[in-house]
Length: 248
Image 1 (cartoon, one colour):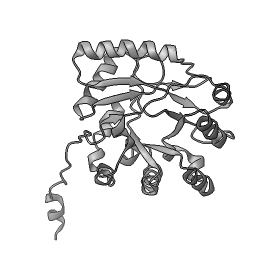
Image 2 (cartoon, helix red, strand yellow):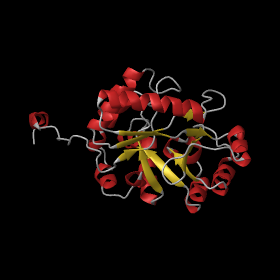
Image 3 (cartoon, one colour):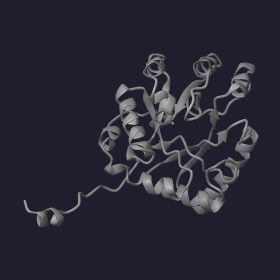
Image 4 (cartoon, one colour):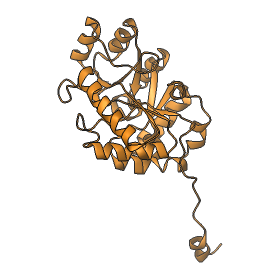
């Protein structure tokens, strides 16, 4: 094959992304103006319309709850959800909307769990939790334990993005051995964050502990990249796997 033949080769065709096999997205930031996600109702409706067009039938949007930055309460989130639902209905977008939260694991959160404060959950008492990306929180495993003692099922949001977890094989194994449910961001499989994050996401999926997929959609840039998922190495594999998303 000559040099000119290389340039004449047709690009590989990639199928349009259709997420009807996933049924529901359980990680996003679509209630406008309460965290670092969508800023306006107009923006939220645009994102939700696109997500419905991708074949999703249900969205569980999960605003951040962080003691230092986003002091959202169940009441604030529920009010935002009601406004969003009305707007979605008026816009005629055929999709179901629910809300939970993405809780940041810190001492204040752990105290709330121990005190029996009500948490926003989804599905079968699932509670989505996250940490900082660089340093492991000392209360990480205790938080999982206390959530389970309180009757919740913790779901560890985007573990592939945590540098401390990537660097600590023993911690990885301990989390896997404890059967903690993991949620991988679909964007991680596209290389959106970095190649190491992509490879770690693929490795975690291979363990069988990843039971949820999420968009973690904040804005249009996320959806633009999500639409490239059908060209990702692991796309056909995740299409054939069983996800708890389908039971929501």
